Length: 68
Image 1 (cartoon, rainbow, N blue to C red):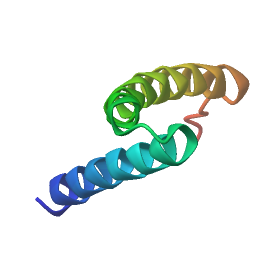
Image 2 (cartoon, rainbow, N blue to C red):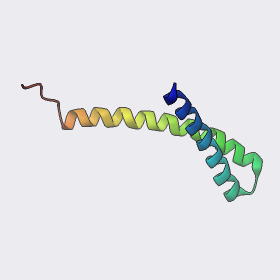
Image 3 (cartoon, helix red, strand yellow):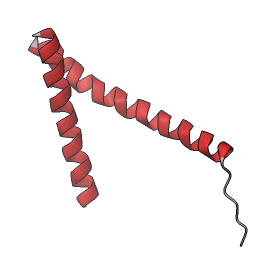
């Protein structure tokens, strides 16, 4: 349960930061909210792909040995 709450609070924080930065750059709240809602979704997809590629690359670079 703690992980779910921590993840949710980070998601909300991410949206707030994205909206704040976009507003600081554009001065337009409508554009800032649009960016602030889309950016975290795109970032989540990019992170997932990054993790998937990283895990595949790490496995190829350093295979796990099961020697005792």
